Amino acid sequence: MAEPKRDLKQDLIGILTDRGEDVVGRIVDLPATQRVLEAGKDLRERVEELQKKVRGIDELEKRVAALERRVAKLTGQGGGRKTTATRAKAKPKPKPKPKADAGS
Image (cartoon, rainbow, N blue to C red; front, side, top):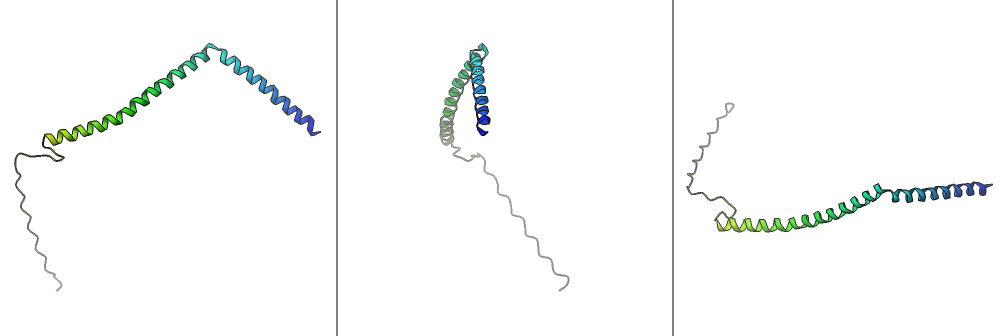
């Protein structure tokens, strides 16, 4: 008795498989499907180009940083700001006198 149910399930799966293959075959033949596949291919090529360009940006950033350090060194900035006038030092504030304890 279990065998007729199994045969029915296998037949049902076989029918669905055949219809699925049929539908896929029809979808592939549609002109819209071809356009979608072409667009996907073009998108993939563009993404690859962008990846190459982005990889090049890292190298350019390193070069720019090196050039900025070189320019700073040549102009005498060397990491800090150079001032032409010397700044007068501020006088230290006098320390307040400790208050006498009222309870002692």
